[in-house]
Length: 250
Image (cartoon, rainbow, N blue to C red; front, side, top):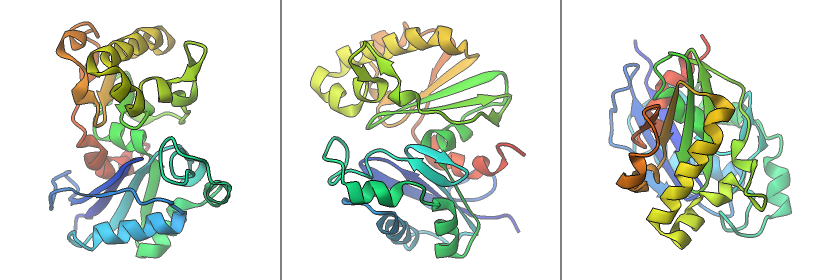
């Protein structure tokens, strides 16, 4: 029988999940809960249980979460190491708890099912890429998510969000939700255009996808200036990618 996948999209402010079949068809409308803080690895897994209890039965689990996730192990994650979430004080005990935590093994053991844990922008991209040329994914939400695919294969992850911009901050902060609220959508949208123009000669992508919850806030007059190689996509890819992620490098 076709495997059913519990797909969980973890953000700084919210957690969203649904169950999909192998064709990517939703078998329940996605459900969401606020990201609980303070957030230890164990508490996040408990939140997964809360989400899954309201959804159909599943055979495997895909989790997309922010930060540097390497072979299912957390090298670094933002937000979850903070006492009350994004832009609050870092809690050393949480920082220690998350560093080196094998999230993939922990999820698999908790549900007693196969599990796959990737960076959230990688899962998002898995739901988007067509497998032709170099495809780059930006996700706009609490901060900046990033992933790269070459010929449909997932490239090694790096945290573009922490690269410096304008000498004084990182991309994660410069185009994040806090700055969008401070600037308003028009001036924030102009920053998105500047970021695209800055990074195009770095990657020379064949196609750039911009998704995430804030992609819909890019003003129409700015969208027209981004270029034909840029595609704005639905935030549902973070859930839909939970199925395709299993076949990324097969």
